[in-house]
Figure 1 (cartoon, rainbow, N blue to C red):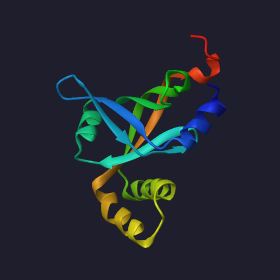
Figure 2: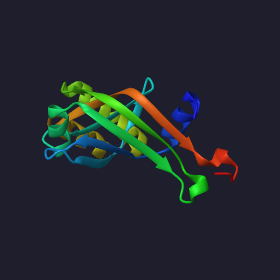
Figure 3: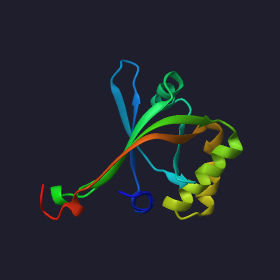
Figure 4: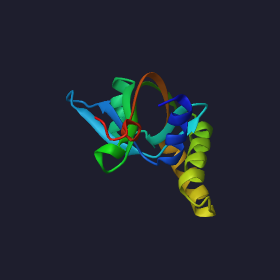
Length: 143
């Protein structure tokens, strides 16, 4: 996929699967809501989550977003990333606001929840090092 196709795909998709290195050396996979800022994926998580502990130990992740139900419909991206952790409460709250602007209704209850949770969360900036994409729809039935 081209850069433009990747950005369009990320815009229409809603969940990224994030793989970090778990404490026993086994990949730890979790789904995340995300936003794209200046071409980079950003997400947030609780600072005491297993994912956050994994990132403290090894600030790298592999991200996957995929769509399609039949083989000839499969398309997606895989990103190998370094992770920059942001702990500033204002940065975290602003990210939470962006995330809920994308996924929620932006109501007063969501704003209050973001303000309550921001001090307990961290913002994750995924800095892409390597990308792989696939789009079986472009194969025209030939595999």
